[in-house]
Image 1 (cartoon, rainbow, N blue to C red):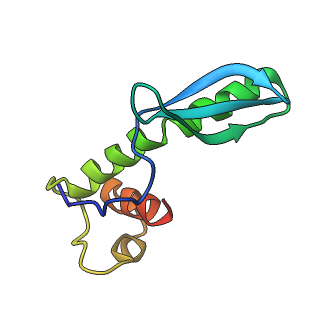
Image 2: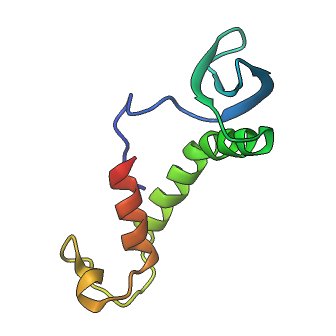
Length: 106
């Protein structure tokens, strides 16, 4: 696995605090036994959408790690990964290239 630069983002796991205050749900990270950090305030058009948005945000650290593992995978695929847009040439995007594109936006 490729090494990740320290301090890129608050490490996971993140969790959802569904106690609604001021019409939003909070995504938290427990930094240690006594310290919580608010990562985000999720809102939505309904209570269900608000919680769903918060859960998606809370899953971000796990999703990013999964993308890194896919990107690092040595499985064969249809492209050579020799250029940044190698799959675009073929017209079909492989999981490794999709993961790399998502990671670049993280």
